[in-house]
Image 1 (cartoon, rainbow, N blue to C red):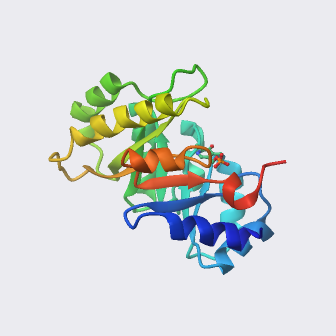
Image 2: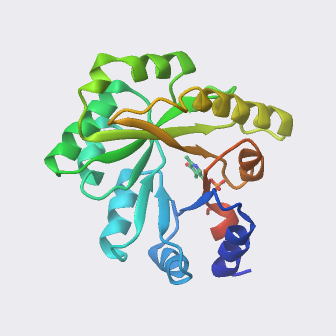
Length: 220
Ligand SMILES: *Cc1c(COP(=O)(O)O)cnc(C)c1O
């Protein structure tokens, strides 16, 4: 199947409240152009350098999401154009994003990445750390960021029940904030699910799915 076919098949299967992010990491620009030409304009990359390189050569109406771990010293490269950062996992990083957003005269939308997996390789805040960050005086001082949701990655396992339970735990946490709304904190996005588990994530309330290999094929 072609990339365009894969894309259309997945998009037409998603419920209306779910947005697809085409995860383009490791794939060459000509393949991204195929997705763009098929009418899709929301792309996710997990590395800053790759995101910037692709941004520079592709059409400017693409929305670029940074989905991978972000180091503070690299925020400045994406701050002029990034549309959503999924992987905020510390106050320090949020402060740097705020600083760079201010320099660019923007408000940058962010998701807090929450650690829900039973693995040591994944980044993210614990529920307790996230709650602390949300309640902190330091957050209230940040005028150029907005926290618009949470992101989480499930354990890489074949055990569907475990994956579903991990997603469910994040949805439960997300729902605790449903009537919290300030100038820089208002949740409407729950980023959960990739090629192997986005069906389960949607069942548990995901609104943003990050899908790579099911569109582009396996990464080389
Ligand atoms: C690579 C990646 C994805 C997509 O993975 P696929 O299995 O190719 O769908 C989703 N989220 C993050 C954070 C990733 O790094």
